Image: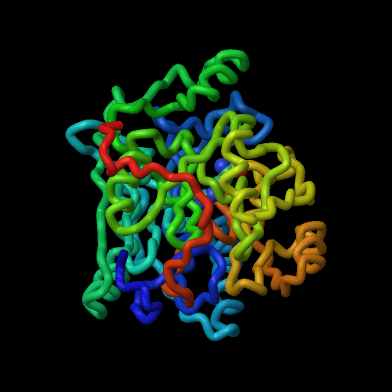
Length: 386
Ligand code: ARG
């Protein structure tokens, strides 16, 4: 395992230790997400209306930036170093040997593409064409960290082709029954032929990484993560939430808050046979309260669910930042002994996420702890070929 003495410039082993340096996304240059085989964006409650394309209106961008800047200020007021993405022209179309797409997306959600695993930065493969180059706005930071501390490693996961054959377009039209059946086989809009994962499908728990099989992470992606991380001393545990028919990114579903405590989504329980890993290792699962906004009250162009309510950012084992209007969640967290800081963030929702999505932690206190001492784990790299 990496030296893990907690002093490296890039050092983050879990989602809750005291935060020292973080990247906060920016809405500058953001575009509407294009329709493509891995994504069918819809206007909320008006699914037949064409989804807009190209740059988002300046006032929509300005409102999101105001909230992102406010988050940055709150973090700075707590002594946390805040870094931001470099400008990038997302309105550029892409043409690769395998696909074309009319515009790219945005740099609001660094969580989706970048992950710190101990002293290593991993750039995810990504799963959607419009997000193929989304690592670029963060590269100046990656270079800076990598140049400044020889203990840091930097890995770029293999880029998939994102050619049509990588996707299963029928996924979008499966009738509910079929969806239910396929869901249990974990078959979504990406096939298993190439390595595919988004960084936001992972939760970090010290030497254990929990990863969700989803529309944005396939089994080949999880195999790649196991083969990459097991020799570095990590255990990678796949998890499933069979009632989420469109799973993408774990941070509105399963949110660790401190050692021994995970906030869960009552609409999306963890698959029954996977609960024991947590309960047998003394982790308590606590259901999040009903969000204040219902799904139909979410912003018109927002593709996420009301459960953005639970997409909180922990800045220490005792302090959590929540969206300002989610009072029932504030109360639950306060009752459990947390200090709750709040910021307005609803104008960021249509850019793909809330507080956890819009950040990427670079440095937190702490080292590689074993928080699952009773886990029964057979490493993939110990022999078998699958
Ligand atoms: N698919 C999630 C939901 O609607 C949203 C996930 C957002 N997370 C992120 N890292 N962008 O519940």
